[in-house]
Image 1 (tube, rainbow, N blue to C red):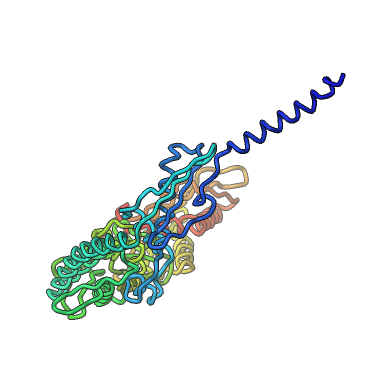
Image 2: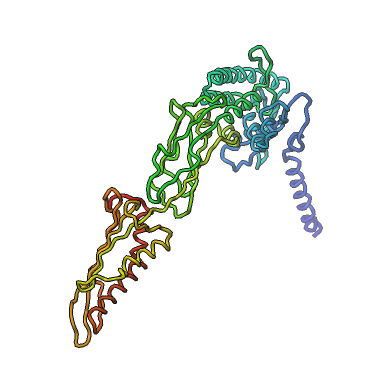
Amino acid sequence: MKRASLLPVITAILLGCASSSKVSNAPTAPAWVQGRPTVAGYYIGIGSARKTTPDYQQAAKQSALADLASDISVSISAQSVLNAFESQNFFSEDFRSSIRAEAQKELEGYEVVDSWEDQSTYWVYYRLSRDTYRRMVEEKKASATAKSLDFYDKAVNAMEANDAKTAMLMLVKALEPIKPYFAETITATYRDRQIYLGNEIITSLTNTLHSLSITGPKAVDVKLGTPVESPQLTYLVANGNGIPQKSIPLKVAYTERPLVNNRTTTNQQGQASFSIDAVRSKKVSETITVEVDFEAIVKEGTRDFAIGKMLSRLKTPATETRINVVRPKFFITSDETNLGSPVERKPLADALKRKMLEAGFPVTDNRSEADYIVSLTAATQQTGQAPQYVQVNLNLKLNVTNPAGNTVYTFTADRINASHFEAQTAGLNAYTSAAKRIESAIADELIDRIVKGDRPY
């Protein structure tokens, strides 16, 4: 009995010893995992990844490199490219992130100090000598500066030759080699003087772009439904010296609607033209805005997203042309008979005239000054007779031509019926029905046809 009573106690002691053994055998995390170390003369990068992550060791290394890059502080020099943009309200935090990303890609000379793992996580510890990093950066910076300076020199030569397009293209290209150093001061010797290269590039690019001027028509009068031909929308691009500029890309915006052919390039004489297939606006005027397509120049010079985004904030030269929408004039002639006799008031011509005037289209009595000639023919004939009523049918034909004689609209109706106990009154009733049809549908259809463009029917 005494031995049996000791069994639970012995079992508890053994289980406790086993539990203590497991705790003492658990791996102890190194100090650099428990708390980020500070080592004089080194940048530190600590990265980790859960073991459930595919290729977790590589993921931890990338995390350590990102941490190492973030340990390298990014301070904006007063003579840096980013500071130049910041002073013009163009700066964005996006570029700090871009610089960190560039720094991570360019990292070299770092060493693995240690790695450690437990059942769930893998850790890696990198460090990079500050002196090694500084030397590496200066070597790469010198190489990048030399490449950038070569493009800058070509740009200066182009500016001196009054070739703005080539100058801007070379200046955009000059930014790409020095992008990793946009936050730093980049000095170079050019034509026996010391310059801040990044600032010089941005200043030259801004000045060259803003020196361009676009001149063209201030206003153009256009008949509704007719095109605006390219000679009417021809523009000249010149630099600050008044020299016409070739190969400058331009883009156009039209307030009525987007234009299909909205981009072009200046020719050898510095000119470029646009056209509109037909002005369809029912407004009094619309506006065309022509501006330098600087985005096209940037894309030709670099595919770097961050540089493109930064330069997209530069204001581009532009000019405006007012398109005065002129309503075309109509001349209306009609032959309206009722059972063979002329209708005195010509109700169909009056209905069409009234509707056109309400829509804002002038009607003239002078055929020679009209933009469209409306020929209207209508006649009634008796089709039957009941004991008390006479049945009448009206045939209507409406034809619209332009001064060249081309038909732009036509309408025919041969079943407009009416009845009355008196034949003449039945015919007039048919004219009343036809007039209502003109006001409710035919006139709008004609106007819509004219608005969509004057072309052969």
